[in-house]
Image (cartoon, rainbow, N blue to C red; front, side):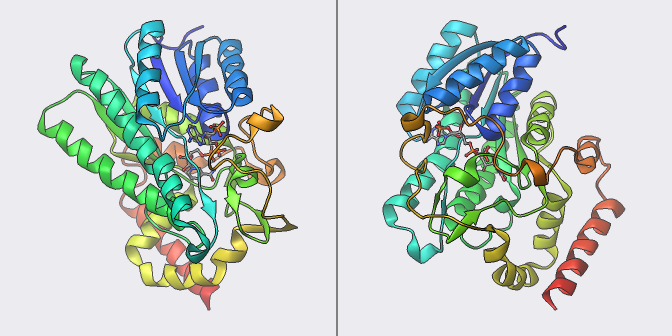
Length: 339
Ligand SMILES: NC(=O)c1ccc[n+]([C@@H]2O[C@H](COP(=O)([O-])OP(=O)(O)OC[C@H]3O[C@@H](n4cnc5c(N)ncnc54)[C@H](OP(=O)(O)O)[C@@H]3O)[C@@H](O)[C@H]2O)c1
């Protein structure tokens, strides 16, 4: 049974990870879902997921760094499914390495995919939504868009930039009394394939900094934000709350804490060769034709529940005393750990 009137939804980076889990949920609502990413195996898998869940799917191989390709995909989706109601910007890539080991070309590529990919999606979506003065754009952000960490400078820069340009666009829409909404969903560490296929120069296998959440939790938050886009942003997971508030309260303390712990907390004990296939320029599944799906390698360590997400979705529940308590606890914890 459909929960609401079916909508036309576009998700970038829909072939794997959070985008893939999100596509499934929109499909389960009976929505018509345009799926954008590059690899054929991931796109085919995502389309099957959406259809099996009860929705309609249109997979389109698209590199989000290419504005023309994103625009052409949007045209195809509107021709097939009608006006786009919801656009989810989610696709990304990164290089896990110290800043001085990243080449200018790699930096540019991460920025073009992870930052400009969101700009392109927003431009293309807004151009269509403005004609109707209706629609919702959801940006999949990160706690690392408020607090940068070592070994991910290009990614953290992109995530900060997304926050900045989104705020700017929101104020322009408000100035115009537009009915279009743009909201951010700031994610915690999530168990997705990125930690196995992002370009890495780290000696050991990259990992999300624990606690790790399953991508379905992130996907439910995106779905909620798409239905309730009047909020400026959503914070998913208690670590996201602690990180953002901790940064506001004690940024210098976080600098010292992350300088001390940030290298080890982003790697498992397992050695990893630095020449494994990565997704920076091409999708990994173009060689292997393997569908990686929504989950990464950390199912045994990932949480299926995040009580804070419920709190953040219920208005004002995590403000005032609640937020102050989380922030104070985080700051205290950091202080203790640093000592
Ligand atoms: N996982 C986490 O811990 C975490 C934490 C905070 C925020 N987030 C955010 O969540 C979002 C998704 O991350 P994830 O962990 O789910 O990533 P992921 O597992 O690496 O999946 C990324 C998706 O993007 C696609 N993609 C990569 N490069 C692309 C390009 N140039 N053009 C189009 N699609 C491209 C990939 O498919 P192809 O390679 O086939 O194109 C894949 O479908 C990102 O915005 C990330 O910042 C994730």
